[in-house]
Amino acid sequence: MVNAAGKFGPYGGGDTRLLPGRGPTGSELVRSRIALRVRLGSVSPRDRLPDAGVLAEELGISEITVRRALEGMCQDGLLDRRRGRAGGTFVAEGWDAVVALMHDAEESASLDAFHLLLECGLVAHSAGEVPAGPLEELQALVDEMDLTDDPARLLELETLFHLDLAEALGGPGVREFAADLLGRLSLLAPAPTPEVIRARNRCHAELLAELGRGAMDPAVQAVKAHQQSHQETHPR
Image 1 (tube, helix red, strand yellow):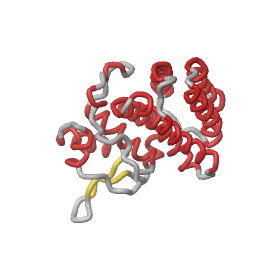
Image 2 (cartoon, one colour):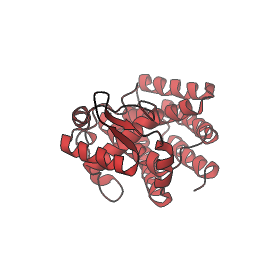
Image 3 (cartoon, one colour):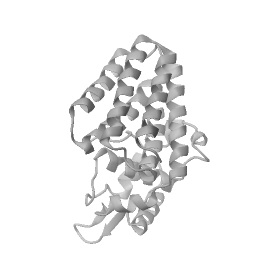
Image 4 (cartoon, helix red, strand yellow):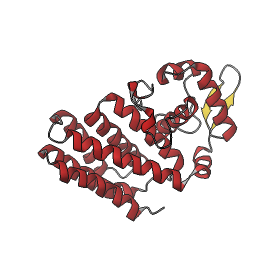
């Protein structure tokens, strides 16, 4: 399915010091991008992951770092290691249960706040300059969210919206940056419910309308309303 962020290297030269606290280590990058793949439905519990060498090339880090990260995730119960001809590294059947034990309200709130700051900054910088093509593609995601009743597909579409928004407003490197934030959040916070996603999607539609008009202030307010709808319908 969808490759979460193309080449997974650390933001194509972006400054990882902008992340809360510090930039991600190689191990954290592996964890966040695998978590994002699960969130996007690219892999599911019991699915085999690509070999360490393939992941290392995609992530732009060393194979030994990937192997150590995968081993750590196996020890945490997120992944399973199987030997033999049909062996490899698999997403654990109990992925969701293990992730639930990792939720951290304080750290996820910090990441949420940073993601809000990132999107407000991108909108303020780009309002009036977004080509029609990317806006149409984002609108297609909004329209599909309005039509689908599948909770898993809703979650996938909502995540894709924010990845595609980051790329539309800031380019591929910013998409990489957002991918790490969203991957980390998928490990630290409960998945939003369909009700939350539908409330957010009204904000998505308003944001796109204001971006199409080149109205910076209302577009920024739509981003803030998206965050507020999350807080009201999904309190921590």
